[in-house]
Image 1 (cartoon, rainbow, N blue to C red):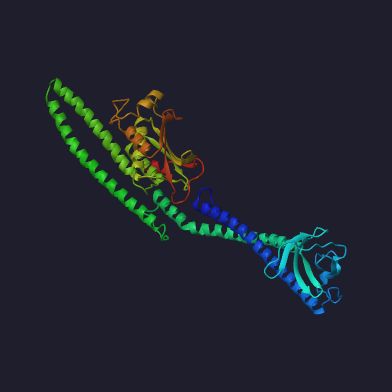
Image 2 (image 1 turned 180 degrees about the vertical axis):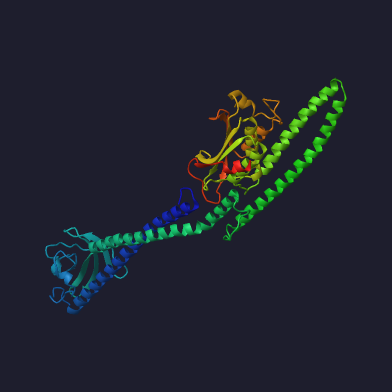
Length: 472
């Protein structure tokens, strides 16, 4: 359970509550056990007092040797169990054998409704005693019967019980904590399944969130599906609006341009210039809207290897004099996370430019690498043409810029590529090729392909040009 997760929060909350509950339970049980033992001791002492009082009333002689208790602890010195009988003057008239050598004082506390007094004292040996005292009146006078019991034994039993109770409760707490961790993990499984289902939609493996979920999170799955449907509808409406806007603007602009061309004056030149700017701006922003709408669709992915194989075959037929070499990637290569048409447009424009400017050789490589943005698809296309300087490499990415007006084209290819790459959050780099011409490297987001996860580093390739050669 990772820090910050719901399962971890439930686990630590349950563990903290269990620790508090077990400690409180341990002290409460110890206190109840102590009270029970103390009550039992008091009842035992009351019984002994009543026994001595009965014997005294029966014999009528407080010094009679027959006055005794059957409990052998009263016969053992320093046992903590004592009894004595005093007269009104406080003189000792009878005692148990255990009292020998001990000056056991009477109880100073006041008597209760039954005529008994009780208090806790210490004997000379450090033993804590609970003392109970009662008065008995005979013809010869009034006598005080005092019985003491060992309270230290009770306290020791309570301490032993407390230690054992905490051990048992601790073991129970550990078992309950483990059980709470298991319960939390089991309870969070539907959320993990929902997360996996949403990830499958994002990676393009599913069109919507599927599966059966508990009542608490089933509405979330339904809302995600509804959001996906709503997003698709919004994008479709946006596409329609973009098409309508294109048709609505291009025709008036074309009319204005044609009318201005027919006129040969200063105003016509101004109108021609401005309509060209308007047409360029309309094309630019309509293209951006079109790209944004296409790449906003969740759940699409494409096999980049198959697309590159198809494009290299097509370009081989269009440029039969160019040797196009494509390194077939390993089967574990991840797919492109996006629309197949977008990847075809990116790779097609770059491959077409490479063939136009090359002097007979073009190399295409496809791989993956792990970086700060995760695993990315890497497309590298290089040629042995004249290449570009750093200044020209920066300039050529501007919309409509062409360094050589003699070569057929509109100058929008690289700009469209850059727009698409930016929309997908990728990168486009122009470098000097080892072949002597231009090296174009494109990095795009990935999605798992048929073989599973992406390779950890740059994919290694095997050379395969026989298919392209046979196609040409």
